[in-house]
Image (cartoon, rainbow over all chains, first blue to last red):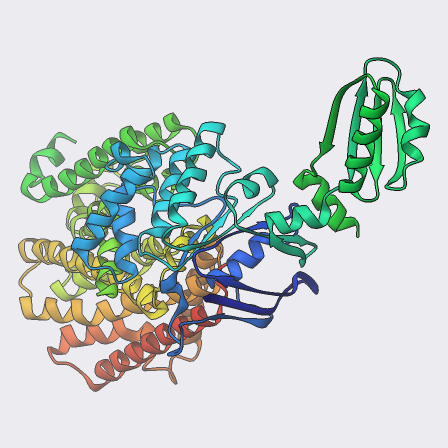
Length: 302
Length: 67
Length: 258
């Protein structure tokens, strides 16, 4: 089921397109990662979807919005550096945010207490926000973004400013939230995207350069690399490897032989076949899985 | 000078002084509790105490920093 | 109701940052300064020995109406400045700090956001004006002579319209600019220009809001509400409504991030 359709979204600043004809659709209940280096346009896309920015051209359409209602009630948004009313307590802010989104008072209070607990700052709920640390603000930020049960949760770099423990906890929290709502989050840390997202959108210079599920992208961009390690110098084996039809090239690095394959499955078969037949003194054989970083570099260079 | 003080109707002057006193005390309480200031904290203490009438007002308007 | 939520937040904020304490006290001080100092002026001059022996000090005997007008005079200058200072950051400050980004991504109607802030300031300003003039009236009564309480209420009512306009000018610039300093500067500048233009073309601008206090003084002297006062009040109210509506439209047309 489609939740949201973005078509030809463009945002121009000072004659430069920060977001350039971006189109995609979101399926309900998915967690989508927006990946790209700083300045790729991630924040601009999130802010446009949240309604903070108006698109220069293009449109954002909610599937269920036949009556053309204010889409903000279905959206929860956490900016990269959330700023609160420092004179309010955490709980007061949550109740305020909920009431602004038309949640009745009693329900707002109940949700505020639940969410403070869920994001792990329940004991700080009655403290003034001016006393909160950066990590606590980030958690309160997630709580305020979800308090009105939005259909789409937009998180701008939700974990990049957190320490490893905080990062872990927020990622777990995102796994939980995924059950209730669609999440779109931006990150420049590819490992985080790998961990929680179902789909990836790779963004470069305002354009979506690649998209798909993790598995799809892996398959598409898997670098066909095999590493062979020998007990001694690997030079004697290079020529034999190069002679195989499935191998493109190789280079020697002392005991290691790095092989670039044309067809990775065939190459693995060929090498292992010869190696066992001739009893090569192998100490290790490894198929190098492409890291997301490699993949990203490959996509961008294309 | 003596005469002036005797002539002054304290029922008239007292409210004026009391209001100034309240302003001073409220400003000092706020000053003691606040975390962030525009400028050094102690500078604002001296402004509140020594700048006549205007001190506490200046503090309330310019002294505290929100973020 | 969303408007009530926004309004309550403003009231709570003004209570927590102690505006509800210091602002009325400051207005009281401004309102009673002249009634007290003018009453004691002869003694003060005598005590400081500022005049040579034998000089006959002739100080005018002020009427209660004149003294109330002195209080308004103080509020018109210093009071207006303080009102601009307390209102210049109400929207601009929230946009500058970034907190508006969290608030305005919620389904907040912009007219609610602006009018709730406006109303909270109006309640604060009218409250302070009322108790300030009440204090002035107290001194007038014990030091200068009687003034009907009804007249005082009329002064509050009509003069309150002028302060309402001051608040609205500030709100208007708040929706136009993100810089708190620019909002304050332009608000003061606008009020000064209004006053200047009225002084130059005063004859043709008898209904300018700047003339409100003149018409209020006439009302106290004549003991009746003139058509000029009513007309000026209506003009002031009309400009207020236009500016406030304009503010909402400007805010709607603006991107929240800029």
